Image (tube, rainbow, N blue to C red; front, side, top):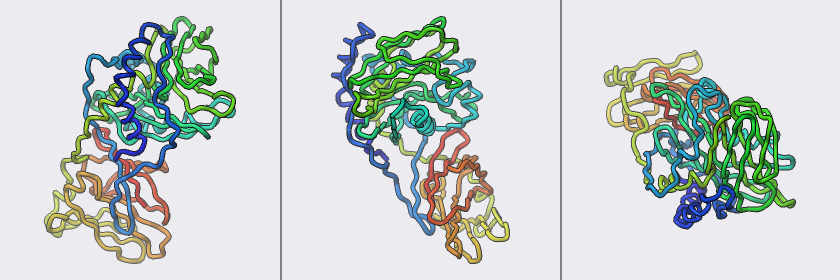
Length: 432
């Protein structure tokens, strides 16, 4: 479901014709300032979710499945000009998670949103910001998947007295026969563009365009270790004596002396490489084209639900029996025939049943049941065979048993569970 940030980003697309003319003029020189774009002093409100009644409570879900690939006309700048040349042998696949393919795979970000969320959480840590700078962020719900291996994600950045909207490019780097693993490649706030980065033989040169004024601090870090290698406040800038095979170049606007501006951008460049037109401007055309394309609505996962498929009507199989809690899987009669009979604590809590389409859609097939003393809640759900694991926001990994998964949490809490399918797609469920 679109949130306010999605709506703001979509509205910016209406100005693309004017922007493209300006970009064409700026293309003649890497140092020509591009027009002010993508700024807002409206702070982002909380995202809206689809609310669904569960057993003894309310839950919300947000689908992180694939969105359609979008096509863009030939008058739009090609994304290839904005993406460093990266292959599986490089030490730095992207900005975040840092490292090679093994590092990115191990980090396990299965969706573009999860990679962007973790990236922004890292970049807005106090120790990663300029002195006196504080920032928070939010991530847009809608992802525009420009190809099978690339997606653009909108975000909002907020300081104490300013806010701005921007875009980040992400890339899927896992082999086709493995679950998707996403890495953030480059991007930034809409009023700031990285015009050019050139890194050869330990010398990095670059230039940028800012529509907000103020003072921009450039920091250069080793793309793998994060070690700070140098900094500058010049435009254009030059840094010599760099020895890293790849560097990340970060830009923060520390303002005009009154307060920090919500302006940030970052890009990766490898030694021997020159890249141009980085940041929100290079990503905007495909992003807005994708925002105008309705997202497909389809079941999240189809396929066998083997425990139920192997039962006759009324048949049951035990999924959990630890003495205090039991969950039995039962095939009922009628549309809502996939049932979990639950006994939690000292009392019988009853049964919850779902239709096959509800289980495949992974929108309503969740449950929660209170303990008799009211201190704990049993949460869980029924999933198809294709859901291979459920990750909790506490770092635990839950493996379904007989197509049922469960967790015990403290009463009054709401936790995020990320259900991962065999093809790498995920869906987040907020339940408690």
